[in-house]
Length: 311
Image (cartoon, rainbow, N blue to C red; front, side):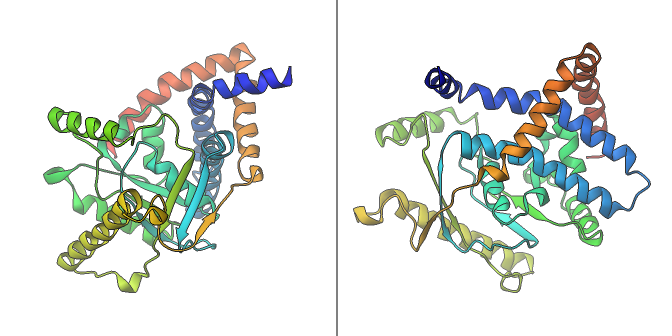
């Protein structure tokens, strides 16, 4: 019986995380909304501290499914500091779960609640979370000529002035593909099939970290642009070596020492139990179910109205 249950749970490994994470969205946003109202007259730092803790609860639930539930191996290379610090996290953009990789590193620095994202503008229309990300310190930006640099600088300056802890995640590449480039997409997919790059599961994630001190980053815009370009040239060379090194011993690994980092259940399971327990409790009563549905409906509408005006 136990073995049958385990096999059944494994067969649902794609469905169950989606159900739990999406299903608990009204519970989470409702809890945050209550705290937002209660803390209206409190100092901003107190509101921020509890908001970061709430964010930790949800994101560690994400990591429970991504790491503990799937059993994926996390292999770290380079320099990952163990202590909290304010950082700007720059990464390449290869998949829809790249944001989870940022969480993977943040929780290992005990900074998961401090993660804030620079997001593409259309994500502000996400039900419930579109508004919340903005409230948590996320910054929505438009690409190319529509990018509002002044607005972004203003928001970042307000966070710095308020002393907001920042684990700021930016994907400078901006996007992974353009759906309008059908010929390029078709050629890319054909190449991936030929090279056997496509797989249904990813049992191991290799993450290479390079920690760069603030004093080593140029401040002038022209030098900054060149510096960023050079960093991504280094990244591309690492990836080419990783996938296509002529030496089989150097293939499928980054240079340097590798650390197999396993995330303890103590970091994620309590959050899962709290969030799913609150959601299940809400759904067991008629009043709770009504509140749940109304949160989805009116929370989404009010959130869209808010980001239209403010984000």
